[in-house]
Amino acid sequence: MTFRRVLGRIGAALFLLLIAALIGFVLWAESPMRAEAGPLAAADPYETIEQGIVMTPSDPNGTGLVFISGARVEPEAYAAKLSGIVDAGVTVVIVRPILNFAILEYRPLADLEVPDVDTWYVGGHSLGGVKACQYAADPANEVAGLILFGSYCASDLAETELPVLTIAAENDGLSTPGKIADAAGLLPPGNTVVTVPGAVHAQFGDYGEQPGDGTPTATDADVSTVITDSLLRFLSLPVS
Image (cartoon, rainbow, N blue to C red):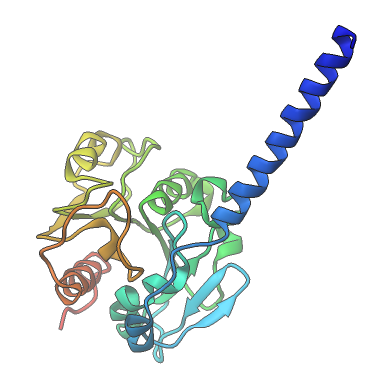
């Protein structure tokens, strides 16, 4: 067998391995962590759209939030945690990123919105928050503020005056409070940080346990209350 033929066979084998790896990644990416049935049943009604789901309040107040799901978490898993602000009149679009990974999301923010909203905020959980920071850093998007759940920015927003709310979980084993503090220099001065005592990374949604996470001592009800109250204050809405 000639050397050229050997190289050809090696190249063909490597190509097949690459194709197999890509197929395996796509299959893995397209099998996200599912929303738990109980919290989802208790959440406000939602409509499935091409980009994910949209939760429309009965009495919209003109404010909207585009919220980007964490890596391999389906958007329905955040419906219950965000129902509190929907009840207060905020329209919420929960985005399913491309292949369930926000880092692969390329669609313009305008394509992820729905009509009948005057003021848009952008936010996300974990990797979804990193993408939300990228959207917020683009002046063309004209967002009113940034909301991060268990996340932090890789984009530099320090020279902006953008209002930012970060909600951290005390026992988060992934986006730890230390990691969030280390990245705080990329955020504008005066940004707000709220830490949920005893909470973990997966409690920002309702999709069960997540590998590498910490051990929760807070209940999901406790976490929901802190999330709702913090968001309402940040959005200048009444806290019940």
